[in-house]
Image 1 (cartoon, one colour):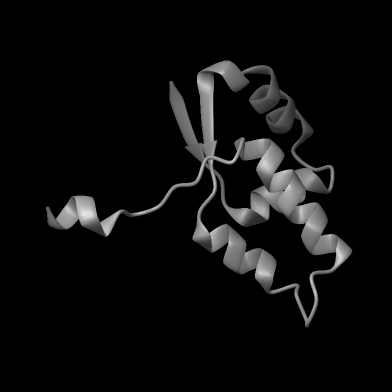
Image 2 (image 1 turned 90 degrees about the vertical axis):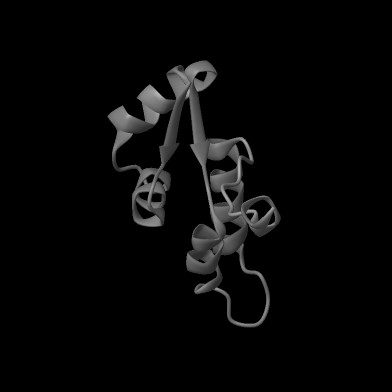
Length: 82
């Protein structure tokens, strides 16, 4: 299984139509690839929020969810310390 972590800039650009070959490749091989998001992606998306969640933010979250199949990469401090 291949694991991939893409920077938010790349994901955002794919959402806006760039990197179409990469996006197609990722979608075609979903069974063999795990794509992750992290808190850093959410932080980048949050920069667009003023007071309410706007349509761009909802669209960004939906795209991120679909691309990553909701696979979140995080550091579990409990497992490190034990």
